[in-house]
Image 1 (tube, rainbow, N blue to C red):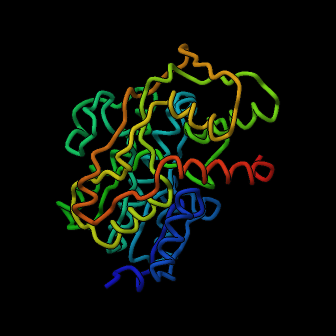
Image 2: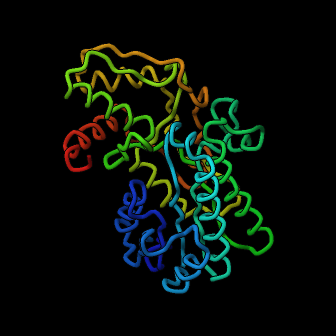
Length: 315
């Protein structure tokens, strides 16, 4: 029996890229009492606003997706903001949920919480075996504190908080702002702009050698909702596709899908970020039956198609 469809569910970040997919999946499962938190109504960095949210809405379940996020450049330019805003949002949302008697709290972490040199594939047991990659460590550590808090609260208060670790998400509706976007939308925009402006080359940050794993946003939303329905343990859980691709191969794949005929040049003076990223995704499959189903090239095609169709509206 679905344990969610008769519950009042709060989704922070529910109006954003990922959150909108999670809200849609909840509705598909028969959940109709969903409250999407908007920053203009409740600034989750402010504890008074967080208290007001719980007082006003009285949720049974909280899915905390909100965060200040961005690529390497944004993290390097704003490490203090990325640390403080993400830490305060998470800590206050979970503490006030506990005080309000919320039944379950689903916290979204980040792959950036893993140590820089984690053995591949990343297993959840490796989370504490070193310091995160420096360019996004403040963000990664702020999100990692949600795991510490969840486990401590379960131990002391019996509070049902679970912690999920998704890899980089992508898909239609992604953030294509070059100041804050992640690698897939950033590369798509670069190539589309180059084609529109008849440029003969595209320059990409770094050497192209690092590898990344990507999870299609719709698959990730399935994973979060399955965990909200079925997972009730203290152990962190990876959400990924189990697929790894180098930035170089990714760039050439996007160039091919967009039929870009110019040169692709890598700038080694720019940072690469973490050398490799691929998750061990077996725990999610064992614990709540999650397995990604969207092929990477298929997902890229959908994302590119969406951006090309909506480019004029979002820029």
